[in-house]
Length: 328
Image (cartoon, rainbow, N blue to C red):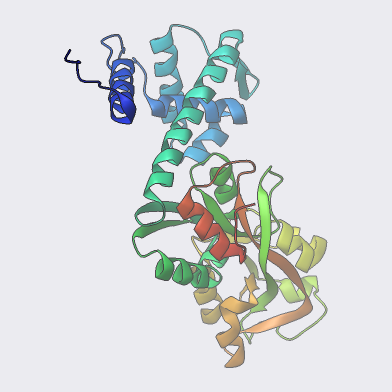
């Protein structure tokens, strides 16, 4: 009696498994949404800030653009998502439920990106990093050099901004991590101090207070305080170094720290809180001087979101920033 050939085994099981996976993936019922991922992201950031203007700063958009994104999402879903409360906004009842679903969508996208990063490893891809002016100019280079040498296939995109803005964008997931100078804003972020920065009051050698220890209203008469970054540089630091008298000194707002340095070098009528590392050569050749108040020490900190699973490239970069072997 002849017997029919026996089929099966591991190869057969694998074919059946592949067939089932294809069956799960094939569907004609996937609908094309009437909204975009950018509208969802904009809505969630507005909901978390409860303020259109603050959300616009985080997103780098105008207020009308943010409002339009939310309105388009409301129109697509057919429900009101936000309610006006004074100058701010809050989630409507429908908005509460929609926000929960939107969070699931964004978490799923993060999982998708994480899966791709795990497969890709740190051999290719890109990494988004934020840095403040001082941290980016004087403290980021060694970490970048070490990371790029170890992982030449990864493109690192660095965006420079004010410390508060960088922290907000790290919190929002725009950047995997950041390097900023303190004092830091109150946010729920993992923070690791990687260096210490000394800030001094700097002036032209011909300024009346150059080399002096005592600050007087007469010595500041005719002076203007140069602000080269929003946040601590414009309020906390001058208040610490100058004391209450800083409120009486006119401010000039500039685009960056180098503009402030050039103005100090050019004219004896300006004063600015400057990181010593940024003007060390100018002080050594006596092109600039300091008001001999006690300098302000502040940390240079690496920041990232708490509890977020960093991809392989981000983990490696975090280790380069902090001198650690893992991301926790």
